[in-house]
Image 1 (cartoon, rainbow, N blue to C red):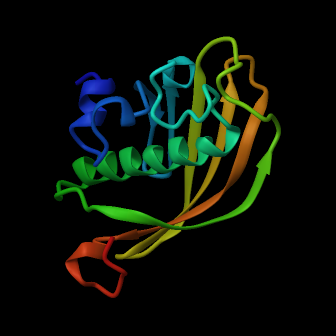
Image 2: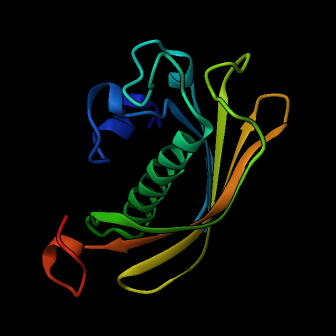
Length: 153
C-alpha cells in the first residue's frame, strides 16, 4: 500500500491544504520519517503575510505523530485513536522560515514513551541536505474526546 498523501489524509483529522505531509519514507514501531512539499506552497494555510515561520514546523511534527499512531494501529490490528497535542518542550529553532528552503522538508518523529492514553515524541525537521531546521519534544493525549481524563477540544 502506498503511504502517500491520500493515505495520510484519510487517517489524520486534517483535510485539504491542512494535510501537510506528502508521503511516508520509512517507519517502524518507534519511528517515522516522512516528507512534505507543502511548505513551498503559496496556499499553505499556516502562512502569515505570505511567509511560513519555522514555528509552523511543530504542526508538521504533530501530524507526523498522528500518522505514526495510525500506522502503529494498523500493525497492531486495532482502530486508530484520535488525540491532541498537549505540550511542546525543548524546542530549538535553527532557521526562521520554512518557505525559503530549496526542496523537500523531511519530518522525523521518535516515540520515546507512551501508555494507553499518552505518548511522548522527539521530533526533527530537516532540509533534504540534512541540515537541522527544528527540534523538540511533544506530548500527545489520545482519545481525549472519549472522556478518558483529557480536555475536550
